[in-house]
Image (cartoon, rainbow, N blue to C red; front, side, top):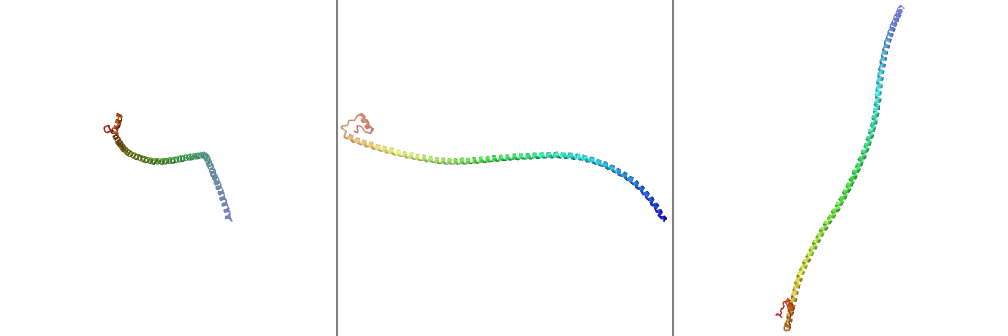
Length: 207
């Protein structure tokens, strides 16, 4: 049994050594934990400070974003208004252009119609002038023909009248000669009657 007692003593010694080592380890580990906790607190404080700064920056950025959103909305509204205005102006200009185009087309059609009417009137006037010229030429030709016929008739009538007058004169002279022969011994002519007889180429010598 003695060896068992020896073993007990050795185990007690080992336990004492172990306790000393544990206490030493605990003290050193507590210091390490404290240092680590301090460092962690410092790091945490630094992180909290940085977080606050970032939160402030983020809040400022959020405010700036809100302002930019407001400006963006205002610009969008202004753009929409400008688009509406531009559309209305474009629509008005298109309406005015179409109205002017329609007016010009109407005026052009009216002018074309008037030109066609005037052209037709001009053609009718030309035809009427040609017909009038033809009629005038025909009338002049007819009048010239009538004048020529009248001249021929007048010439014929004058020649006929001259012939008839000559025949009448010759007959009268013959009759006068016959009468004068009958009354030759009893007729005494005055100067006036002799002149009248001279007009018929009769003299007192013939008588």
